[in-house]
Image 1 (cartoon, rainbow, N blue to C red):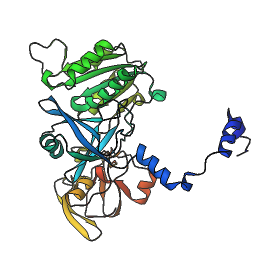
Image 2: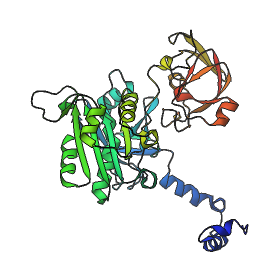
Image 3: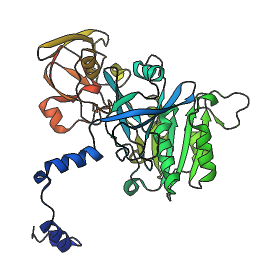
Image 4: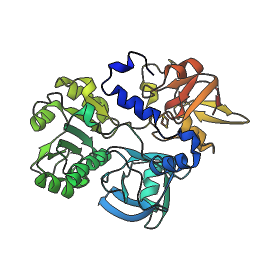
Amino acid sequence: MNHPLVQRFDGADAILATIETRTPDTRDHPAETRATIETYHPKRLKLVVADVVEETATTKTFRLEGHDRAELPPFLAGQYVNLFFGGTSRPYAISSSPARLDHYDLTVRRVPGGRISNSLLDAVRFGDVLTTTGPRGTFHHNPLFHGNDLVFLAGGSGVAPAMSMIREITDLGLNRTFHLVYGSRDAADVIFRDELDELAAIHPGVDVDHVIAEPDADWTGATGFLTADTISALLGELDGRMAYVCGPQALYPFALDQLTALGQPRKRIRFEANGAPHDPAAQPHWPAGADPADEVTVTVGATFFRTPRNRPLLDALEDNGIRPEAACRSGECSLCRVRIVKGQVHTAEEATLRLSDDRFGYTHSCVAYPITDVELNL
Ligand code: FES
């Protein structure tokens, strides 16, 4: 500790003195340590549906309160919880303010053909108890790296994390500017429209522009898609402001093209993780000649089953009653990591693997697809 390098840091003496007199190692207090972790970073939360708000014809907000705790774990605006339902799970961004921890709001939009969104919207009622992970995710504002002048391109229910960021600014009166450009199919599809417009009107740092793809005759705002021309007309020069993007998968490559055309550096664009790719076979490294609809055999210990190549391994495992830990379902958090003992998988571009994963044959099952018969270790 007394290496000469240490002395080069401002305050080194004070830090060393603190280390000398620090409270004993957390390993000496396992019960207190567990209780602290459980308070702030619980693996699971039990939440009660305290209200259900019909936002649009296809979208509801579920207000969730703690089942056995009054104050929920803190989170950063933009983070999500993974909601367990019907033998699987889905991550949903928290749309409420991190300044109000007596509830989390989850805003769910009906996905045509989507098993979970449809079940949630049709079956969940006031008083139901739901299970989620604690808050997680890296799609949040970090003032140190992202600055305090932000823009957000949202599509559809991708407005949920933006709503949380705006509510935080207005609840706490933060000295931050935030310009939301929010694309919707038609005016009736706009989620949180009244509240967004109200907050923009009363808070000098918040601006909101709606862009409607299929406007009716009464619409007087911006129309079309979130093109470079529209972004530029509404936001002016981006000037290196941090740009957040959240919405349907198709928005991501489109928004990247538009922002790049406006000279926005890639490192000043942040995308929310957004599920497994709908068409993994369209990715350039999908093996030539491997028909995505063909079935292969997946073996886990003494269990084996058939599944199509284009079904993510995590979904295929859950279909067969095997439930690895999971949260983001987008290749980011690494909780669903499995080891490929035999066979070949296609790991989608979305996976953020570590070098050691590659080296020792691990992949993220939420974005990995079995190309041949495979054997897995969980
Ligand atoms: S669930 Fe997060 S990487 Fe798979």
